[in-house]
Length: 171
Image (tube, rainbow, N blue to C red; front, side, top):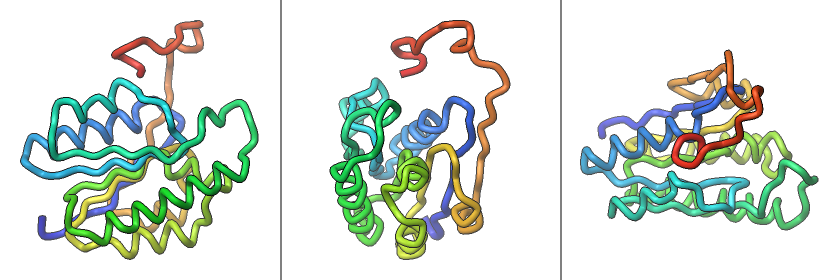
């Protein structure tokens, strides 16, 4: 690619990670290589099984269990910083055409990372590398640095009717 752009998929609606994985599959089918760094995640979801179907994709997780029900601990901060260092290595290399930083905005929102270090990471990327950042609560600074911002807004969700996540559809 001549120029790689920065995408932000944010908002309170469903589908940010799913959209990023869809873009990953599109890139893979076009012969490109993909790296996905997942912040605050440590579980294997169905979408992570894409590595079983394609050769030119790598997924690494930088999370320490579910943080929805607990406060961040030192280990969470350490893992997020290790993830940021690893993603910087990836963004400076020419190994991957598309880099997805999944839930990076959540790591910022939870205070695991500082805004300046994330903005510097994005500014340091190789000009040819396409980058996607996902997660709720994207800051204005992130939005300003991005070339494409999608705000996924929840209008209606079956979860409010008691329907939990379904295998192969929601996870």
